[in-house]
Image (cartoon, rainbow, N blue to C red; front, side, top):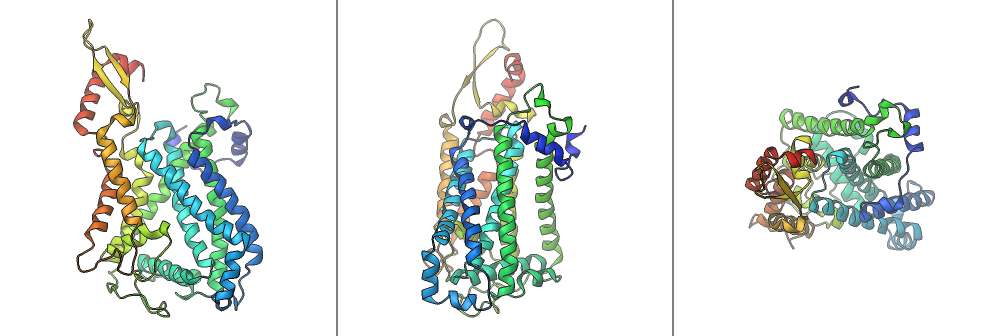
Length: 428
């Protein structure tokens, strides 16, 4: 069977049930505490969100009523609303800690490549779910969030087709739009939890190294590879569509840096609402859209960010041809009797001074763009806002290149030594 032609959607459901039936995952085998906390928070969000859906039913008078100060206070004093809102903050905190920890440890194992890709795809879907949830809260950020989403979609497809009107109707918040986005938010949240479960199961259950495969059918041996191909295909389709739209459709004339004025949402065709401070977890995205001179550059940068994050195992070469770097060994040669006998000395990432410096610069750049606030405090149009722009450039360079984590000359030396060594080949 050629696993690279496997498709996850066409996998037999009965065999998937058999896969989970024979699986055993010990609690003591959890590799990431932050990832485990993230999954627990997702479960809590499903419960609080379901209970919240019973009390918040969209009605024609809901939007103007909710914006009254008294009703907003009632919403914030509701236990499920408070739990659901604070749960989003906890989800982002745990997920970013989980992601940065994996990047810091260079945790790209060949056997866990599919698990990494499913995790990044879950992270991407997580952004969409939260984006939809911000619209449903009917607060002062709902119109802003909806207008930004509508402008992004309108820029992406240049307003072609009726699908835009079916989702958004217009850039103003209304009952029909809330109902549509509520369905998307609710369904995608459960799909998000399913992807998180697949991500956790695939990274912890090491069934591929077992000779018996626990009696699983041969087709299920390539379960995670099929899932990886499916997710990779979706990411590539998104990138291809983005490139086609970038070439075919003209650049919209939306270059004004005018401050957002209340009540002008339906008339402004720009994503730069500089007087509105978004939630902290969306500030990097808004900062990037603000510093970019054109819509398409900003959108392409967002797609590129998730694209290089998705293909981290491929970019950093953790495959069978480069498994010398996967072991992360420092090789010391000893003159015994044969020059091709070497002794590997294992060391941690703390020994890599280059990686320590570049990672902390990466972390500082991420915190710098997160601290971005509109309305003039951190944005300076006259001076060009070079600090934020260069921070974004460093984030892209760090994620898209290996030389900032592993010194190229040292890496070539390790590879040359590995090729000459029979000892390392036999023990890898």
